[in-house]
Image 1 (cartoon, rainbow, N blue to C red):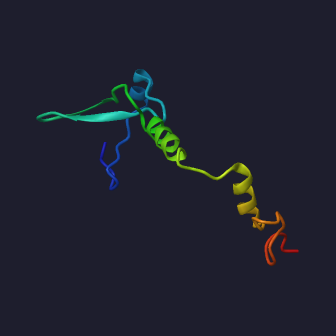
Image 2: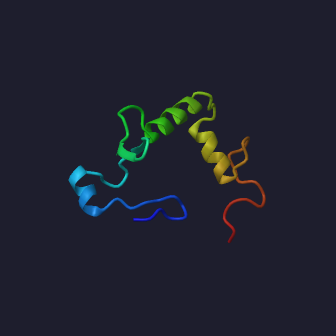
Image 3: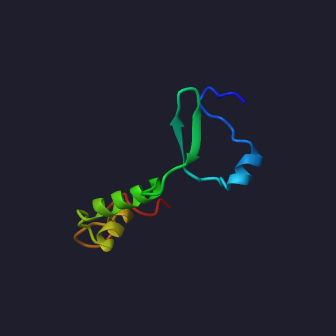
Length: 91
């Protein structure tokens, strides 16, 4: 097999099935003197868990209420609850 211009290789289907390497399985490359080993990534925090932790931390400083966000996205005037001129239904 060859490495693509993007640095990718295909793990043969038989090998993926034997090892249970499903789409989304995280692997890591371990360099040796004359070889490179591919293995499942060690247990620990995974990429998805890192993203969730980041979003939870960022959300601690978020002060708008749901109602304020909805008014903002609808283009409603903050003081009256009505649409401002030029906002809203384009019909």
